[in-house]
Every structure is written in structure tokens, then in C-alpha cells.
Amino acid sequence: MISDIVNAVSGVFAFLTTPVSWVIVQFHTVYGAIFGPDTGWAWGLSIVSLVVLIRICLIPLFVKQIKSTRNMQVLQPQMKAIQERYKNDKQRQSEEMMKLYKETGTNPLSSCLPILVQSPFFFALYHVLAAIAEGKTIGVINQSLLDSAQKAHIFGAPLAAKFTDSASEIEAMGASLTDVRVVTAIMIIMMSASQFYTQRQLMTKNVDLTVKTPFMQQQKMLMYVFPLIFLFMGINFPVGVLVYWLTTNVWTMCQQMYVISRNPTPGSKAQSKMLEGLQKHVVEHSATRNKRERNIVKAIVAKGRDRNEYERKFINGLSKAGLAAQTDGTVAKGSAAAEELDEDGTPKGAPKRQQPKRQSKSQRQTGGSTAQGSEKDDSPSSEKTSLEKEDEPRDAKPQSKAKQSGGAKAAGSSQQRSKAKSGQRKGGPQRPKSPSKK
Image 1 (cartoon, helix red, strand yellow):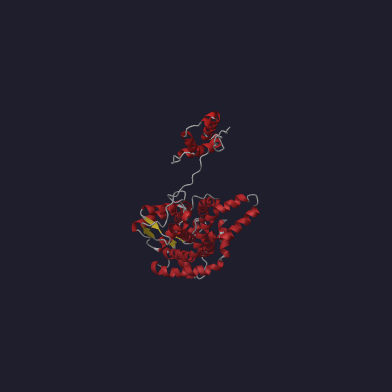
Image 2: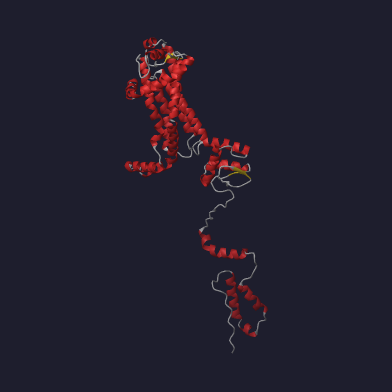
């Protein structure tokens, strides 16, 4: 059934069989002069070269795919917020998602562009190899090239043989069923394993682990789904198509390893490893060595307080070595161009905001008078209050008879002054009235 579907789809892209067959024949002419025109090396390397040529042409799309995937990861918190806010209104949720994509210039389908663009060539190659297996000329492959392709074996397996072919079909191609089954099984396993490793590398090394979103769960699911798809579909592919798909998987894996090591996702393990190596080289040479390193340092310095954990660790490591990153991406000795940050993102040595201690109800009720008394007691100056200054001259002067006759009033005034000292009298001190002359 899968074979019928593939044949039907291949017929749709039959118009590409002529350019695909022409490219294969040109490479076959070169490799045939080296290894012999009827060898599996000549035809196999022709298919590998076809893949390399296609993937080189798709590099701009691959770069766009990387940027789109990076943007999707950055937008995950906002997308999750939209989903939670409009979880009961799917139409409004879709509208807000499209609005977010438009504002940020992100296209979710960009991550699939390399596969979508490459698929027509894949089916065209399948159509060419199917015609070779049936003994039909196709495209620019004439009868002599057809006979040469049918004689070509890759490790004992004919170029057009499949895992599901019967023993009689394999014998008609001049090979044994065991050789075909072993070669195709190994290639299918390698194809699935390379696909799994490529996706796993993306998930474990190049994803911001501080953000947990449905996008990460989706990528994790694809890590297991894609290898299974290749595993079940691979048994229906000719050996030449398996060579094509295995080559493109290996190319994708190596290309992704290069991109992750050179331009990792911020907050990922790959960025941590990259910055550790960069810090070691910068400290060793006391300078950034090339434009790439300067651009990395410049971008980190420009972030300021928005630096993630690994970027703050990088800046602090330079500071401990007596170096400071400059705004132009260079480093200088003994300067403090880039401030050192704590784990919470604040500059080291900066005053921290302290929360006031909570007081009990009784402390709040008596807090005013207690605080006022403590401020007076704790003041460095030992100045006396105005009441005490007024008491001293009165105590020093001899009391007259008139004042003695008013002893009761003086005693009352003394009691009032003592109350004023203890803070119980709100009003200011009052002098005793002078006795009236009779």
C-alpha cells in the first residue's frame, strides 16, 4: 500500500525526472572514469553528489528554518499566555496567534521549508530508480546507461532493489536475497538512527531549558515519530533512494552540529558549552581573537540586566581574571566597562532593598512615644530639655517668703513638670503664677 502511494506521488513530480536524471548522468560520467562506469561506486557517488548539490542550494532555506525555529522558541511564553487567555474561544485564539506571528515576522511553516522543497527531488529520484528496476529508459538515461545502472551493485545489492522484493525479482537483477536484505536493513537502521540523533541533539543541546512549553513537548514527540516513519517506509525504498535519504540525513546532522556549536540558542546547554570555551580562550589571550568572538561579547554586553545565567557567568569569569568586556566586543585589562552581576541580575555591591520588620499591635500603639523617647535618649548630644534648663535657675535662686507661702502651688507645679518629663503631658511646661501682692 505504501509503495502504491509513493508511486502515485512520484508520478506527480515526473516532470523533474529529466533534470534529476541529467544531473546523475553528469556525475556518473566523472565517477565512471575513476571507478568504472558499471560499478556501484560510480552510480552511488552520483546519487550522493546529487544530494550534496541540492542541499547546497537549500542552505538559504536552512538558515531561514533555523531563524524560524529560534523565533518560535522565543514566542512560546506569549503563545502559552494566549492559549490560556482564550482557551474557551478557539477562533479568537487563532486570530491572536496569527496577529502575534505577523507582528514578530515569524512563519511557523518556515521550519518545514527544506523538507518540502527537497521532497519533489526525492520522489523524482524514486521515479527514475523505479524505471531502472523495470528496465525502462527515462529522462536522459538511454539504453546503454540503463544497462550500466542495472549492473551496478552497492555492497552486493542492486541499485533498484528493495527490501520487500521477492527472491525471483532479486535473482533477475543478478543478486541474492540475503545480500539485499542485509544491506537494505543496515541502511534503514542507519537512516532512522541519524534522524533520531539529529532531533535529540536539537532537544537536549539547543533548546532553552528554562521555558517549558507545548512546543518542546511537540519536538520531543517528533524525536520518536520521525525515526519510526523512516523505519516503516524504508522497506519500500530502492537501495538508490536509501542512499539518497541516508546522505541527506547525515548532511542535516552535520549541518545542525555546526550551527549549534557556532550559534546556539540563548539559555541552552550548547550556549553554556560555547561560552565556557570562549571564556577560556579570551582569558588565555587577554583578547577576542576574531570578528565572531567580538560579536558574541558585544551582544552579551548589550543585553545588560537581561543576560541569562550562562552569560552572567561568562562576564563574571572575565572579571575574576582581571578583564572586562567592552561595548565594541573587545576586552580590556583592569577596566570596569562591563559591570559584574549577582545571580538575581543586580550589580554586585549595589544596595539591596530591605523590607521593614512587621510590628505587633501593641508595638504599633506605643510605637510613637517609644520611638520619640528612644530618639532623644540615643542622640549623641546630651543637651537638656527646655524644661530642665528652666528648672535649674529656679532651683539655684533662694526662695522668698512669698514663694514659701505659695508652697502648695509650687508642689503642684513640680508634679506637672515631672509628668512632662515622662511624656505623659502633651502641653508645654507652665510656670507657677507669682503670688499676688496684698
